[in-house]
Length: 71
Image 1 (cartoon, rainbow, N blue to C red):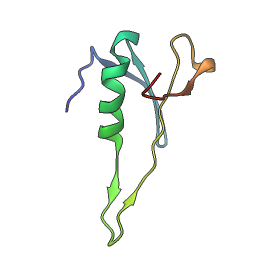
Image 2: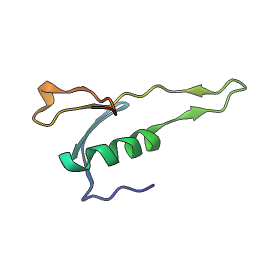
Image 3: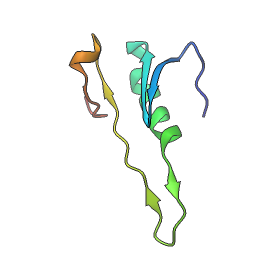
């Protein structure tokens, strides 16, 4: 799975948080790819999976909400 610069623009990274810009019409297809690429599994006998959440807004950073695939 790859993303191109025309698909996603990384605007800022703070620790383990990323702020990206994506064209609204691409969000349903790109969000699952972003989550898959960011998934980290630590290979312990009982694997540890670092939790993820994706927030988004169609208008501005102040109105971001958790993304639900069914929306």
